[in-house]
Image 1 (spheres, rainbow, N blue to C red):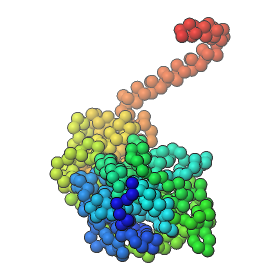
Image 2 (cartoon, rainbow, N blue to C red; image 1 turned 135 degrees about the vertical axis):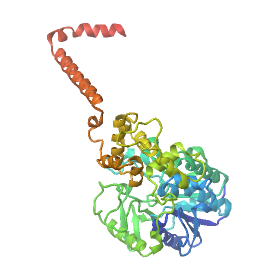
Image 3 (spheres, helix red, strand yellow; image 1 turned 180 degrees about the horizontal axis):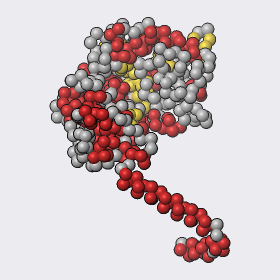
Image 4 (cartoon, one colour; image 1 turned 180 degrees about the vertical axis):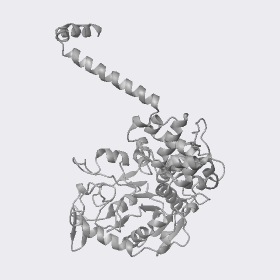
Length: 463
């Protein structure tokens, strides 16, 4: 189905601390797509953000339902991922663009994306790029498991046509991320990417670009040859289109990414020249206002919001009444139900109780119904980096605070067990060792070897 119109919008999403990268990206977009209207969607306080040639849009102004809940439930990374499909829909449905492209802030264009243009011209609903175009070799980083966890497609680049199929796919993606935009690889969840694995099977007219010059990054560089000639950068002998500087720190341009420490450092030629060039582009576009603290990083009291608090809210309190920025802190510091109190005054707060429940080893070793288990849980929470404000709520009084200040890690699980449990574990271990030695000795005996045929026949008869 042909697209509705040829009007093109290109956007990125990011918080204030990513604006230098966002401006550098948009400069490359404006060079290669001069006909495009460019937008920066700020998942943060957008006031005063400068973006030459681009329109700045606040994340809370594009129709995301229940904004206060989602901005509390998700950290900056997850919130900016959540904004992607909603910004697509805002540009296509509200502003009437016939085709829309999204790029992550840490990308740069080095040529026009001819494959994406052709796919949209042909009426593609969505245009996606796979992380890999060939099976990874042994030792490649990431390997097959890493890609399975991250998802088949990298959503740093997505293009969409404002067709019925394209809009339906975007609405479905938006609905899923509105409920599940965080990171939990053990549950098959990685921000906005894993749901995109389902899209080609659920919606027609999804174009998959198998172009080695598209979305080049640390995860596929082992399979591609980066080069440079008199006309610019190349990949496998053709013009480089889009490079994804995922995990790159412009302040350390000698390292390709922080996500894979096993990669060569410094990287082999000619990559260092590309990294240095990109770092210079970003450094020339940073503004003092970019350093303003993240707008959704603190409670109304000014206390920083810990990651565990966001996870607890998302898992158990999505229907929280009122504004969680104003009221959820009090709940976190309240005593958890069905827990003991230590003689010193140490107690388990709702936040510490969640931290224990969310950690399989802590949940096994720290009995919150017993006073000693409570003391261990608070000390473990301190060792896990619980902020002082929340630690103080669990340890009122000088004696309790002194005990909580003695960190307790889970390095030796049996050392955390209460004395009676330690004894039971020791006795069980000793009995298991004795049984294993007796079984081994029996198997070495003459009678065991002589009766082997009989035991084999008995096994056949049981079948």
